[in-house]
Structure formats: C-alpha cells, structure tokens
Amino acid sequence: MSTQSGLIEVRDLNINFKAKGETVQAVKSVSLNVQPGEFVSLIGPSGCGKSTLMNAVAGFIKASGGVLTLDGGAIDGPGSDRGVVFQQYSLFPWMTVRKNVEFGLRMKGVSPSQRETQARTLLGLAGLLAFENHYPSQLSGGMKQRVGIVRALATGPQVLLMDEPFGALDSQTRSVMQEILTNMWQRLRLSVLFITHDIEEAIFLSDRIYVMTARPGRIKAELKVPLPRPRRAEMMDTPEFTAMLRSIKKLLREESFAAMGSELSEGGYDGLSMEVGPEGVSHVL
Image (cartoon, rainbow, N blue to C red):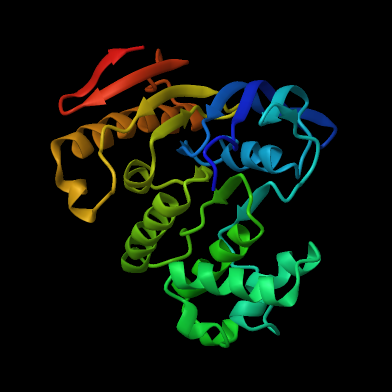
C-alpha cells in the first residue's frame, strides 16, 4: 500500500439535519486531516457527531457546507477508495469467510484466481486462513469483526473508516483485536480514521487524536500520541500513556457536563492543539 495516497482533508465542515421541522446542527466548522498512512482517532461525548462526520467522509451523507476531499478530489458519494467497518459485523451469513472477503473483488470484476489469492493473503495476515471455509455463524464475535476488516481491505482502499468496530466485544477480545489491528496497519500502512468512545483504545492505536465537543460537534483539541511503534500492551503502563489518558479524560469530562447542560463545564479549550508528554499537556501548538 503506497503511503502517497489516502490524504483526507476536512475544512470548515458543517452538517445539518431536519428534525420535527427544525434544523439541527450536528457538526459545526470542523477542520481536520488524516495524512497518508496515518492512524487518526476521533473521540468525544455521545451524540457529538463523530459518526456523522465519518459518514460524510464515507460519502453516505452530504455536508451542508465546507470542503471534504480525498487526495485532493471532492468526496461526493461512496467509493472503493474508502473501506468502511461498522460495529455490527454485516457479513453475508450464507457465504463462507473467504467468499465474504471476495465479494467486493467479485463486484469489481476481479478473476476468481486473483480473488482467492488476495482473500487468502489477507486472511492469513489476520490469522483467519484456517477458517476460510467456515460460515459466520461458526465464528466468535472477534473473528467476525476480523473478517469484516479483511473484507473492507480486500478491494485495496486508500482509506479505512472504522466506526466503533470493537464496541460490541468483551474487554479481553477487544484488547486482542486492538493489537491485531495495529499489527495489520503496521504492515499495510493505509490511512485510518477511527471512531471510538474508549480513550485507552484511541491512545493505543493512534498517531493523533481529535477530541470533539458536545453537539454541535467541533474540534476541541488535537493531540499527538508520543508512543513509539510497534505498539505493545505493556505501553499502557508507561507515564506517557497515563498522562495522555488523564488529559483526555479531563477534556471529555468538560464536554460531558456541557452535553448535559451543566454550568460545571470549565471550557476554554476549543480549537487547541497540544503536545502531550510524561507530565501531561506540555504546551499548546
């Protein structure tokens, strides 16, 4: 996978919806980017517009204003240049694991032999080759989600969009899936935009994290993750990880109060970009 493609740019994005005859603003003046080959997470309080923003990048919904591009071209609908993974597995129950992975390739007219080779290569990378002839009903939740990720990767997208992909998994399976995903990303190096509520998950996986405000969703802070790669579970015990966890918890606590209409929210961080080191936020960019 070339690291010269997969540049997502979002500038002054607004997304509005009609609800009971009134206009509701879900996303307001959001600007962010995902560099080629970069892993970026979006995190924020429930209802802040994270999934709405990702759906706009996927081309599933139209923005009300602003600029949304992939490699300089306007995003005006879904495309094979973006693979999407949701929390629900969405596998075809009547197809085997390999046939599920081959589905997108078949739709693109790829020959049967090439489909099989590509599917088996990716299944091997995900540790699923031994299950290629199994059906989804025969798999655990974590295995189903691995198949979903492999299927999204099979068509060779420049970007992988992931909306709470591990949200339905138990904590132990989720931890294993995080390591599998970061190892696969390390090998493929495509651009990833990852939506999550889990702060530790965002830190462990990401190069950068955008923290969103309560609705209407805006960018509250941008944080660089100071952890080296490859990532290992024991990194979660380091001072750098702990300091970043504490900083993001503080930011989200403020937004959670704001989302509930509380005056306890301190505010004052809107639009900040911060470096985080062992002692927490070291300076504002």
